Image (cartoon, rainbow, N blue to C red; front, top):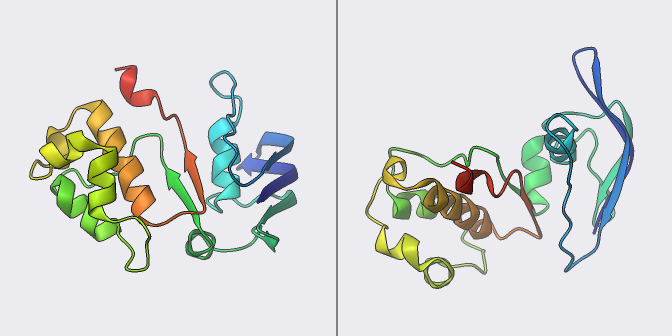
Length: 162
């Protein structure tokens, strides 16, 4: 499904990733572990086209991702839940969900509310009124409504550390 081979990524002149490789097969759960500054987020950003690796290959379902625009990569079925969640804080839970939903998605609001019953209870509340854990649920739900083939979570437990 996803193959990352020997990628090298930089922030300006800082060589952050030096030869990172990994493979994710369909149905697998893969975790990147490492200390702060080890390059976990940079690896995810490189996969998603936020940062373009200067060396190496990234393939998703046989398609080369390096050099593609972020929206092109997202259209292929990759979805990111970023470290700081990326929800619309002034919109209600339900508004956040509705603007994320693709018409062709197999995920519907009822599915999301079954998976996250707390979001159904809080559906009229603004994003900023949610707890950190509830905001994380909302961010994951928004990503699922995009019907991803691969869901990528950056710092998924960050909300529970606060």
